[in-house]
Amino acid sequence: DAGVIQSPRHEVTEMGQEVTLRCKPISGHNSLFWYRQTMMRGLELLIYFNNNVPIDDSGMPEDRFSAKMPNASFSTLKIQPSEPRDSAVYFCASRGQKETQYFGPGTRLLVL
Amino acid sequence: GENVEQHPSTLSVQEGDSAVIKCTYSDSASNYFPWYKQELGKRPQLIIDIRSNVGEKKDQRIAVTLNKTAKHFSLHITETQPEDSAVYFCAANYGNNRLAFGKGNQVVVIP
Image 1: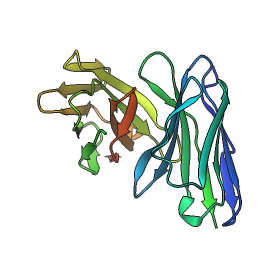
Image 2: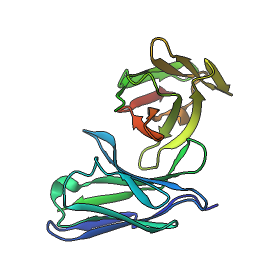
Image 3: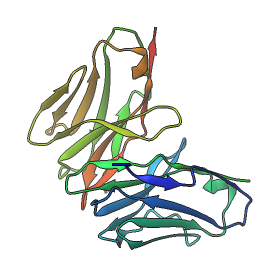
């Protein structure tokens, strides 16, 4: 199994641009989580899907952030427009029937 | 929601000594407590977890203990090695099996 796959691994963009992060969960997992990691705030849960349905998006910082899961094998996190304070590492994680969450390699985002 | 706190924030140990990291949680309904290890520039990876029906679990040089009454759990690393240097995150589950993470502990093993 390839594990959770994320793309791109690194993204450098200018303020105001749209950023799209992608995630492919582990096959057969029915829950998907998007996290943001910064030194100041640690690992923050942004949004959580169960069976492709968003269950809790209370962690999404503001309307500039949106996430979709059109099918069981793909999810996107979009930031539009991006701002320098969005610079962080964004992790996707998936979970199957047991409680364990498996993390992807992350996307390192730098907004200039 | 759940609030998880870790202590100390940074821990330095001599190679071969033991390291202990403590976490506290707030939600008495939490029943799953994983520990993740994150090396620099890499993803968090599960190293051990414990469920509320046991008080201790061991896997080679690492062990986790749980005190549900006091709402705290600890990670124990024995015979530390340089490759144990990393940031360690504890977590506790809450509502629909989401995880609340602590801020992490930087462990430095001095050769």
